[in-house]
Amino acid sequence: TRDRDRPYGPPPPAAADDRARAVALHYNARPQATVVTRQDSPIYQLRCFNNWVKAVLFQTYLRRNDRVLDMGCGKGGDLQKYRQADIRELYAFDVADKSIDQATERFQTMRNARFRAQFRAVDCYNTSIEPHLPRDQGFDVVSMQFCMHYAFSSEQQVRQMLANVTARLRPGGFFIGTCPNANTIVRKLRHADGLEFGNSIYTVKFTQKDEYPVYGHEYSFRLVDAVDDCPEYLVHWPSFVKMAREYRLDPIAHQGFHHFYTQHIDRHRDLFVRMKVVTPDSPTLPADQWEAAGLYSIFAFQKTD
Ligand code: SAM
View 1 (cartoon, rainbow, N blue to C red):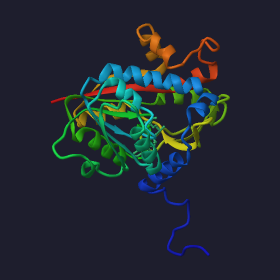
View 2: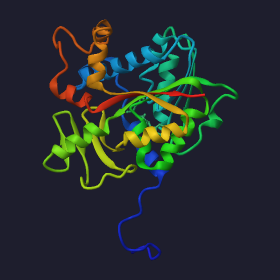
View 3: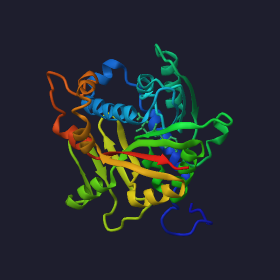
View 4: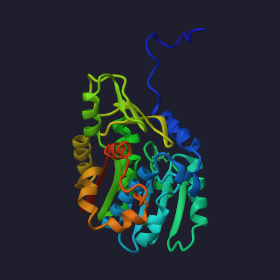
């Protein structure tokens, strides 16, 4: 029977916290890879490349003894990088509670962790993270890796996210991250015959290509062995930079992964090899994985006084 109180027409858009729940379900459902299964992955080198990008980004912006807030930490894939950076303290949040459990366990079993860490399951785009933070403590760096774009379903969520990023970031501190590059994605969409594009390892699917709203511009993303048709949102960069300035964040870097690689590879080639992005058997990134890497950008902002 039809719900008599509901008007005819399409169902109402999902509430913001329903969307956050759907993202949490998606990431909670992904199993934790072991070292062996990771190496068998069809996107092994892409994962290593993404880790190399994050490691170089950390080397650029993190300092010894820093206090770091990670909003969207996932299963704790960056813990070793924080150890390498020799930070003093980490607060790591994610909306997916099972991912937080795994991150906590990973930290507890980590050898030589010279920093303190707190993990919490928190929706960082729909709620204030204030109650989960220690009183009167500032952070030197806020890191958001491969997760900020989930906030762009609405302006309200982006504002909540920015309020959380900046509430405790000290003046001069950095807000750094990685996220899909809307320019690259839209360019590929415009060149596509239909509403989707991709290659053997990824697919990006839109429902229309006539309108480009600043918020809530949804597409579905599939990356083999990583993301199964998860709804994501384009990040309209000029609007984001304008809004970030309202929160006293000055843009200092925004660069596609391909350019980032060109700029940093000479200085960080050893790390590239150590992190197994390339091996004697596979001395370059396979073309499909390289193309998928090109969908992403790094970014950095600095908090003003
Ligand atoms: N940062 C980790 C990394 O680089 O490995 C995880 C990245 S994973 C692609 C995206 C993460 O964003 C997921 O763990 C997801 O649960 C988290 N996320 C999405 N929406 C969130 C929200 N509203 N609050 C906190 N975390 C969120």
